[in-house]
Length: 136
Image (cartoon, rainbow, N blue to C red):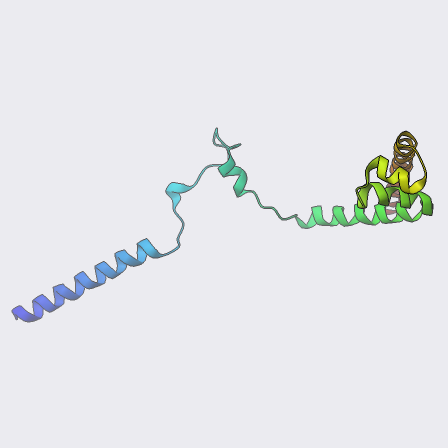
């Protein structure tokens, strides 16, 4: 009958409208907005924002090993050397402020800090070498 045909067509139109609304409001992939990573503008701010800021499991393990190496090296420093590093690096007093606490001049503090950093670097290198030899 005529009224049944109209009701049937009306229901089809309602379904089509609901489907169209769902397709515009759903959070689906928009291929037209994707940017290939090898695109000429791959260095743009948009593509930089795509990079993950989390570390990979391998990078995390390397980071933890480096922290462990640093902790071991710091333990081998004298209390005074750790104090100098703490005042300059952790407390951010600078050479002048750290020197005032230690009773040293600006230049003496700067030289001592560089000497301690060099010693710390050597200690870390030794620790890293020993670990590498142990693992092979």
